[in-house]
Image (cartoon, rainbow, N blue to C red; front, side, top):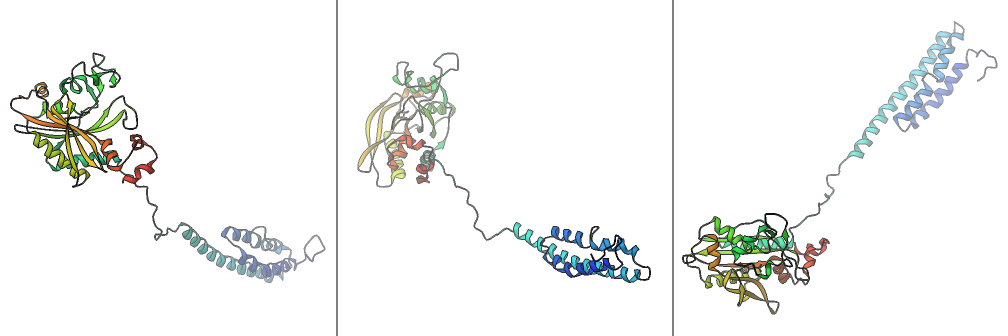
Length: 344
Ligand code: DAH
């Protein structure tokens, strides 16, 4: 300020305006954002700016000078106002562009792949076995896992004294009228009886399913999976059994696979056999089988003099282990997926 009096001299506001006019363009140009520019606007042409101050002081300017001083103030205000407007336009475009750039999606970036899951090895084996028999004309059925002792044992010709019925082998459930009436099925064979009760021969059915036993070691789990098979008609022979199961082994393990049948015992088949297959340089037991015992037909209302048939049952875990050389059944249930990922 050049004034030394309390009342400012008539030219003081104009001096300040000159300073403002000289400094404003740089200030405006260096405003980096719309918000900065608002601040610059406030101190250059706003209420507390030298312009406003000059207008307030116009009253003290001698009348004859007032129009010229007033015009000078307005000129500076307009000039600065124009610079601010231009800068505002530029900053608005810049900010809009920055926003667009920040929100831009690069459609050329490779996508993030979701981790691909897979069917569990045991399910794969069951699906494959079922497919082989479906290709031979078999239908697929499933039955209850909580089963009655009648279907699980009695209908399968396993008398009260049969060792499989023992508490130490079987999970009995606390349902039903009698303590040992309902249990977790110990095999899929009870579906033979259930299926025959509902269907007349010819019957060709496979039953994949979960079964339960009180067993736990490197080759036994308390929960495991079986595929049951049943073929009943008027003239089925042991040759049909051998031909069908040998075909299955060749489909499942490869066309070179050799099979052999060894005598065995199951209450629900007579005669009974185990089928072994030659794989990895040794004979491996794959499944149990046999001609359906006439006693089973009697339980389901079939006439044993009119029908013949064969049945078989195999463990899915065992097939998986034999095929892939898996030594411990428990690795099939290991929650670390790196093991199972090998068998996509
Ligand atoms: N149910 C038998 C088991 O769990 C397996 C079996 C053997 C099923 C012979 C059959 C068969 O249908 O004929 O050990």
